[in-house]
Length: 112
Image 1 (cartoon, rainbow, N blue to C red):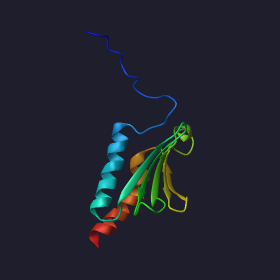
Image 2: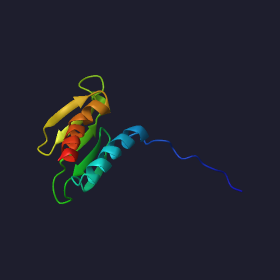
Image 3: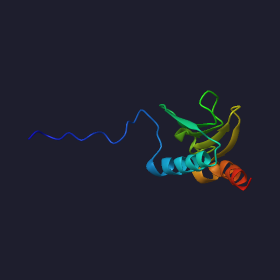
Image 4: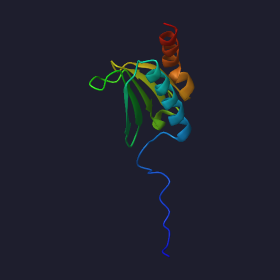
């Protein structure tokens, strides 16, 4: 038998989503897909930030981007919800309140 070399737990040069954050985001994404509103998503992981982008159609700009920027944790908050035009709709320390505008929109889509 050979030796087992453990894999590194995280790449320190890259920001990412932890399991709870990703579960929360993908749960919202799944409900928007079920409502027939979103059809595709993309994730981007960079040195300073991570982005989850949700698309109505794959050929368009993302309708919403959920951005995580840990460098802003002690200032405006590391989470941001950005619309298609690049305007920051909501910023905060926690993910739940930042996703609230999309949650409200989902409620309107389901009621119609």
